[in-house]
Each structure stands twice: as structure tokens, then as C-alpha cells.
Length: 153
Image 1 (cartoon, rainbow, N blue to C red):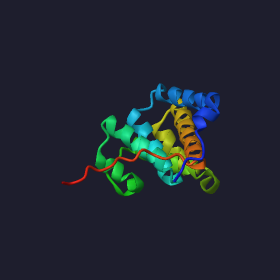
Image 2: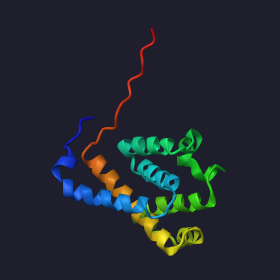
Image 3: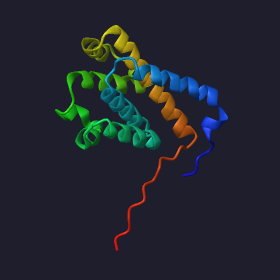
């Protein structure tokens, strides 16, 4: 796959604005581990290899376990996630697939049981922002770094 363009070069001010939203969310008080799980899960749904690669690496650097990352796509069937994470992941799926789900009341109630109003707005903005990044990366064919295996002598 070949990138279509360097979108950072093409519209730096626009991307700086999106980065500023990301920075605001990071400083909002939401747990960094939760932020990376949400970013990874939305990226899985959207099929954004660039973002999946980036956010699983970021999660590992922050201490996330391989097992939780491997099972993220099947979080409902695993006991590894907290009630707060489960609510955030359900909301991530509902908001990412908004045209299909219309953000159902039962999932919203799960989120509100775990998150304050401010946190719910921040979480929803996080989900919207990663969806924007996914669409940018996929549309312009961003290519994730490829690590070459060492050859066996």
C-alpha cells in the first residue's frame, strides 16, 4: 500500500486543531489506559491498521498487558475488563457505529452509571476524535511502520 499524501504537510493547522482536542482529552482526567483501549477498539471497528498499530504500542508503553490487547475485540467474553472499561467500550462501539445504533439508551445508562457528565462528554469527544483520525488515516492510506524480523543464521 502506498500513502496518497502527507496530510500533515497538506493541512498542518487543521491537524494541529485535532491534536489539540487529543491533548485536551489526555488532560481531562480520563485514565490513560482507558483512552488507549477506546482508541484501539474504535480503530479495530473501523479497520485502521495505522491507528491499531499506534495505539496498541502506546498502550503497551503505558503498561497494558498483551492479553487485554489480544482480547479487546472480544471484551464482552472476558473477565479482564472493569465495569468502567466495559461501559466505555460499549459506548465506543455504539458511537463509532452511530448510523446503525443511534447511541441506545441502555448503553448510555451504563456509561452514566460509571462516568460523570463531564467524563461522558470527554469520552464521547475521545470517540469522535479517534473516529476522525481513523477516517483521515484510512482515506489517505497511512502506512504503519513495519518491523523487519532479524534473519536466522
